[in-house]
Amino acid sequence: PGASAAELKYAGTPSQATSEEMIISPDAPALTRNEYEHSREVFFQRCAGCHGVLRKGATGKPLTPDITRAKGTAYLKALIAYGSPAGMPNWGSSGELSDEEVDAMARFLQHEPPSPPEFGMADIKKNWRILVPVERRPKKKMNDIDIENIFSVTLRDSGEVALIDGTTKKIVSIVKTGYAVHISRLSHSGRYIYTIGRDAKIDLIDLWMNPPQKVAESKIGLEARSVETSKYKGYEDLYAIAGAYWPPQYVIMDGATLEPLKIVSTRGMTVDTQEYHPEPRVAAIVASHQHPEFIVNVKETGKILLVNYGDIENLKVTTIDAARFLHDGGWDRTKRYFLTAANKSDRIAVVDSKDQQLEAMIPVDKIPHPGRGANLTDPEHGPVWVTSALGNQKVTYIGTDPVGHPDKAWKVVRVLEGQGGGSLFVKSHPKSNNLWVDTPLNPDPDISQSVAVFDVKHPEKGFEVLPIAKWADLGEGPKRVVQPEYNKQGDEVWFSVWNGKEQTSALVIIDDKTRKLKKVIKSPRLITPTGKFNVYNTVHDVY
Ligand code: DHE
Image (cartoon, rainbow, N blue to C red):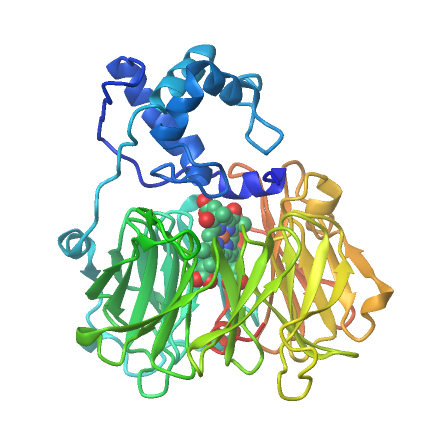
């Protein structure tokens, strides 16, 4: 089965990791220096997101020289120009690449892939800065904001996060961060926000300051997506970890200063064919509540690592064989089981973080994409964890209660029909009877600009559609409605209306009980908002 349009839109963004290398393979078709350099750049911009920096394949097929040379220049040119039913875009006939560019790319791909540089301790230290030393930071909270109800909002294309007071709905401050921050995570105390940019820059924000501000920054590679902090009893706020896409590695840091302490490569053998993979990217990371461990998803090898930070000089790592390609996931409501998507295997892997082993592998329909998922109590099946999907309209419930409902545990117990494919995130709250399902990557604007909401107590009744983007009243633009997030009290749900960089975006706040519009936050400073992370809910893994 090929990649869907939604999946391509999702995975095919430019890679931040580029290379200056030029590797001419003597038995591949000739290429001028200019053609090589241009093709190399086009590859990192347009192709690496799906095919991998080293072309080993992910969303797209592998394109290593053994494969590309067997296909030959004419075949490759046709594929690049016209695309394929398996999901390859038609770069030539769409006019995005000229005939000359297509031709050069077809030859470039038959040479050994140039590799972006490594990024070790010396590079990280060069980029590490303490802006406010620990001893000069406040000893108590210096502002009168209810910091537990702050939302850290990614302003994707401006390289910032907006800190918004969930009570007054006012922007408290806008903090310069790495480029296109992917997620914000909180320290266990709720005092520090950690952001990770696509460019692998990590920023540490102290919410006790007035106004909250950045106290340290670092860079742990060339491209990254995940960051997390130690949450186990006795280790609160002690460590942070960030996972990189390039180089494939994770970095353990001091939680208060971001001082890099340990770098571990994730290169190694794949879980199924047990072949060496040079580029296994680090996807989601969560902090265990059962042991002093970080749970690290390694995408291309399909392995889940339980990295024990109890003694980082003698690092113990438990390696769990799951499936390719591990992406995102979250806790069940007991915070014992981590459920995570293996999105090319169409499975949800369940890790028992207490017994440190794989609990189950659950087959689901095409390309599950849970975010952190949603935990609810189903009227018939008891506690469940929910995911939606990029590849289809299904909203899948998985039983998570091996004690009270052993016959339902780790099985798909219910499948709801949502608005359509191209969904990225679902959300609910322990105090809510609503389950929200976004569809920002659906090709139909009516669907990508609205959200579906189900009644948790009556799932059979189907969904109601709320036209979130329409309510924001923004004028033109893609206006994708993305990522529901609750406030601390669990009585409001916030959505981003993600518009183009030059267009007006907004945050739309819905009253959870009535499903009525409560407030639209619009400001020229809110440039391309995407992910939102409420401090209380993120600290306590409420979703
Ligand atoms: Fe994400 C989570 C990777 C595109 C918004 N995204 C994640 C995680 C990973 C990931 C590994 C889990 C982090 C964790 O929990 O530790 N995302 C990727 C990609 O590789 C991908 C496909 C392409 C890319 O080039 O980045 C990608 N992601 C997107 C987007 O286009 C989104 C919609 C907008 C944006 O800001 O770039 C986007 N991703 C998010 C958000 C989360 C996320 C909001 C966190 C959800 C949560 O509730 O935890």
